[in-house]
Image (cartoon, rainbow, N blue to C red):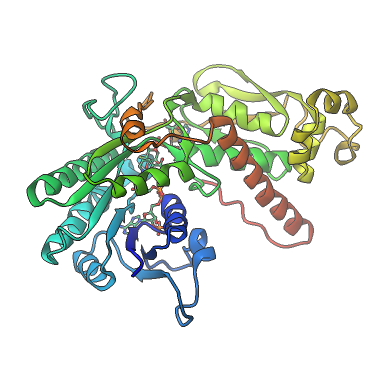
Length: 407
Ligand code: NAP
Ligand code: G4F
């Protein structure tokens, strides 16, 4: 019998990568998805197989972390060997607007799932993973943060996740459940939600390069995060549940960058050198220089070839105006264009200014370490959003209505 896993939050970024990994490992994968008024399974549609076929190992069940009876029934019906509790209202800023709902789904939802195991007498059968977070460190007590660093959450989301962390520890100690907390630092990917800062930046950069929008707005440019790639981080979740003993682990790259650095790096990918002018709410990001060969290649979709070419030779060949896409002018973003502004709406009532994790314990216990660098992450995200922007550009050129989907 293949091993069976149940993933809550399977329609999210991590759920999709984890489902792929577990299917590759031979698991039968059950996911819990919420009922929505429109399709919400984009990230896992490629894994879906008609359940009438033979040998299908991927199944979806309707459910919600706020519905205990539903969780009990789904656990009973799917009989998982491993449960990965990834479902959460995961947006920190939104948690200030919906604090009670965030506590209900993120804190009590975790309790409901653990109680389901007890009610069904499955404490010794099931291994349990809880999606804990570096947001619990909040107003950080030490640098870098490790498993022993005290928590000091700075948002309703962080506070709810602290409850989820401790109830997981408590059920491990009280009932002997193989339950582990992954204290994951920020991890991103091309399928990251569009309102988290990294994806918001890479989408905007791609759309600005294609001329689909002129500028975008951000909040605090100076907060610092330890950003890794989601593909690396779901591997850590899986490894935690393969250990003989449960435990709590920091999963991080050990390096941090500011939001500002992310912006510069992402614009750099499409050949735009940005400079910042002004201060506070008046600060803006202004195009300083455009590397035309690179910019033009990004617009055409030949960026990979351009990057593979010798940078020096490409630069020498690329005098302004010599590129087909830009012959009639300098393209949509000539030097001097303001492409980034600040909007106080995106500042949080209490901010987490600086996070960086020490993943030594995970490396020593089960050999985990991040394999994808910050630069590779930004490159992959921008490249993917350029594809989406080119598709939108093409559709709109052919007269189809293209929605902007901006926050
Ligand atoms: P995500 O993309 O926002 O996905 C969250 C998932 O939870 C989605 O499938 C969402 O469903 C589902 N969900 C939300 N509320 C639910 C509810 N009440 N009942 C059932 N499902 C619900 O988040 P992610 O980035 O994949 O993160 C996965 C988990 O890791 C989350 O618990 C997050 O808090 C935690 N975490 C994330 C990071 C990070 O940097 N990504 C770092 C540390 C911890 P819909 O698709 O229907 O909205
Ligand atoms: O991308 P963010 O919204 O992620 P945040 O708040 O760090 O939370 C993410 O990582 C946590 C792990 O540490 C997860 F637990 C959580 O579920 C989520 O995945 O914001 C990153 C930083 C913040 O300091 C924010 O203030 O970017 C800053 N920022 C600046 N302008 C912005 C914006 N964030 C967003 N979302 N939108 C902006 O316009």
